[in-house]
Length: 90
Image (cartoon, rainbow, N blue to C red; front, side, top):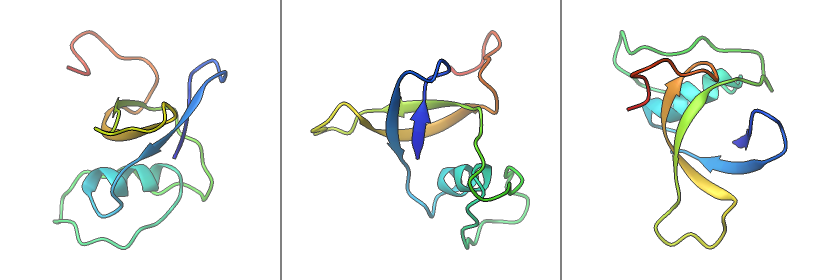
């Protein structure tokens, strides 16, 4: 996924495994339906139109042997918005 800073001046490419709850949730946020077998009742964002953009706050980590500073792993969705309230994201 292409990740941009709020000001639009910086971007990185974020990676996540498709067949995980996180991967499926992020795919739904940008309109990419993935076949999945998640347990019933698993909270999941609604599927948006293909190519949608989403304003979210995510936790990122550099891979152990990163060869570039433009590729990161997406490890969590912290909020479905840019703003974090006190106590969120810990």
